[in-house]
Length: 193
Image (cartoon, rainbow, N blue to C red; front, side, top):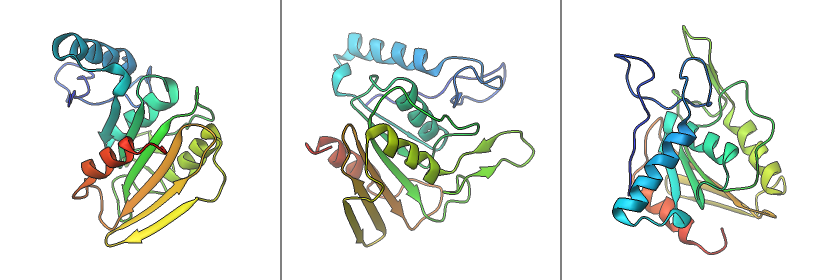
């Protein structure tokens, strides 16, 4: 496991992901940074770049969606938690991907329906609209092929022409649900994804 943090976006400012490369607030290239991190991990620790699962939480989840959209070949799979596209939302991506999205049903920080950030000019996009874009990119039908509601989790999985798409909702808010990493690894290692 390699766990990089986003870069500081200005002197004295906290580390963060740019969300959209070239965005004026965070003027840098996260894809370039992640490629450098992966090359370093491959050289130092023998990490196989062809077996990569890119995951992130909150703004890191938004970074996952952006990298998946802008550079679908970067990872073998993408697992975003509580983060998605921001507005203006892209209307197309560069190819299909295997994507797992985990989100809290009661998330008020990154609501499923999106929100404007108070005091800022940025808007979090609607997660449902983002999933619709992923269904188009992956050639998925509108309706999910599989539904499961067990305990605190609700899952939907689409059968797609390319890539793969699965959504897991949990009863909580903006946080990592217990067992999320196991769910993500089990999803990534399933051959049908």
